[in-house]
Image (cartoon, rainbow, N blue to C red; front, side, top):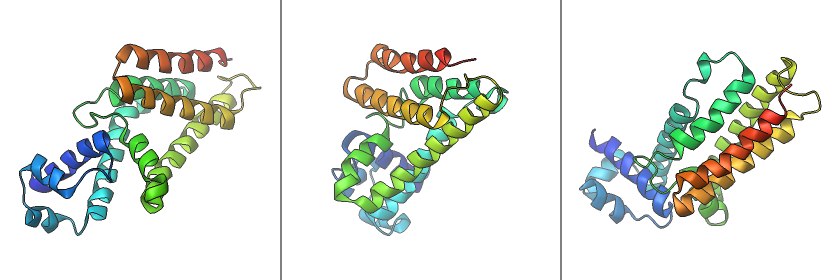
Length: 194
């Protein structure tokens, strides 16, 4: 791993643990055993580093949460896989996000302090909810969901449940509690299956 990649990786880990505002350039330099010149050779500012970290965090999220869904035919099975991957592959990724979901940490921290950066995080939330709604619309069209199931409301509920599970997991790091948070979402979804 080169210096630039190492800076992004360690900044991501720190942002997931401490947030963006509470992570100093000095913290990042200490973790990467680098100098200010080394960091600023790759990033114009801390905000520039934030953009690189957010981009990397999104790539990791896609790799982990969307793993294997392209091999599934059923849109409802894709949604189920997303929930399981979020629980087992993403939130349990202590190598990249030891503090839990970095998007949750950043959105809560930056909302009032740096709305410009919070908007960039929220953009990912909006795209994810749209993807879930699309899959649930496809599932209802394919007859996999009961006709009375509302894909828009269901995608919002699943998203809120995932965020809640992430917050709880971030506080106690308990895989058992995480399972208890995600499994009811899967159960509810299964109860709406046609």
